[in-house]
Image (cartoon, rainbow, N blue to C red; front, side, top):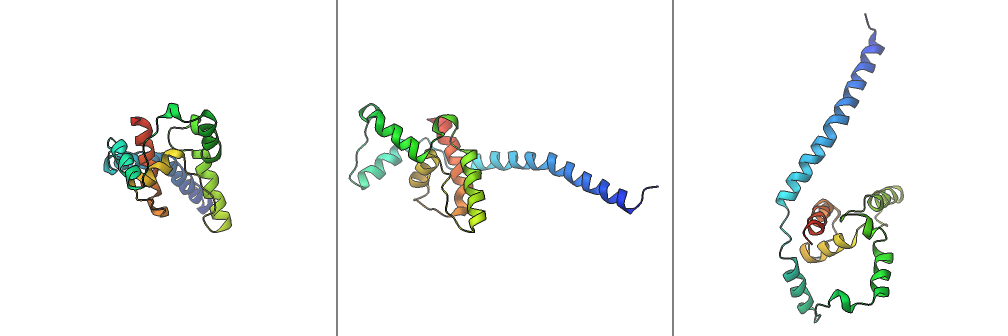
Length: 145
């Protein structure tokens, strides 16, 4: 017969196993639902053109931008641009840990795709509660364009 210690250990192991199996499944369901409820990104070029015209700008073809400028932008804003698909998990984790340690939002962590989605689809809203929506939109735009 097991004593109270053995039963408690058994419960702890059961909870850990349940979390290890359940959390990834729950996360997968949340991402799937999130992708369904976030707006489609097919109209992004039209939205970008509208924003540009609002501010007196025009679209510039990528070939007209000097390589040094695009390389500098990527180096400053999204150093792992070529290694991720819209979400830089390493940068995101670093930013969250730094912000938690310092008890305030100090770090970025947003990729260029996330920054674009924030401006184009979220009216530049920097509310941390909208971060999941921003992440999902970045995934969509990377998959689409």
